[in-house]
Image 1: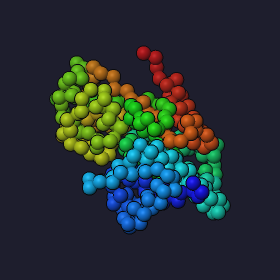
Image 2: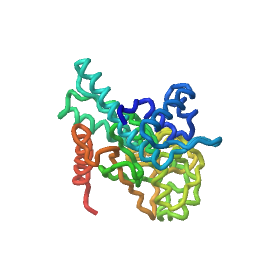
Image 3: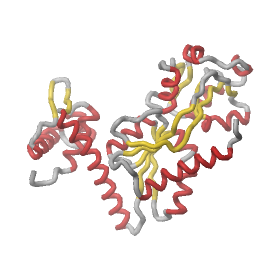
Length: 304
């Protein structure tokens, strides 16, 4: 191979893996489908291997294509970092670090972490993307961010991770709900049979609850944010399980009531990234700050 592959062809290959067809990949990248087909063909000829199998039902990657697409994700991530850093330097600024975080982490933890990071890296700007945990991983794979924080109990095999905190989840109801005065802990079987107000599919909260119960919960209502779930629960619609971080204030003022559970709902919060196994630079410092904050909180908790 005598020349570097162009980045657009790598973007298209990643998009085919994510969307399942050349047409959908072309739309995602913003090129015409004939141009996309030619670009993938040039990449295959340059590498000397078939990357894509085309059929009337869509496109799939060959074994070689699956190997190359993971390299492509890393290359695109590095190229994005290169471009962003160069842009910042031209503008006389420090580098910009792009971070994605799931909603609970972004709302309740990231602001404190970033405040501490600014003390040690005052010239570094942080661009924060807020999604559910599934979409945070998608951002990493697409090279849109270099570091993420998720609530999932597990992460995919192509993603590196480290646990930075632990987050208890709480079953809450409205003050007038029949469970509001319950003293006997609710069993996992009772909870699994109960329709709940839940976050959307792909949310770390939803995934952690399903995994803890061993079955998929039955949604009474699916909502896209913790705030919407809190309001719906407070209205008396149905119970919900949310991060303690998301309900501690509502419990304190009495608009929500915690219900005892005969099940420990405690999930790890993870930093996630793709590429080198060990983080370095500002990203490593941010992860260290997150871990230090958790240890400080634990040291202040009373022993049981």
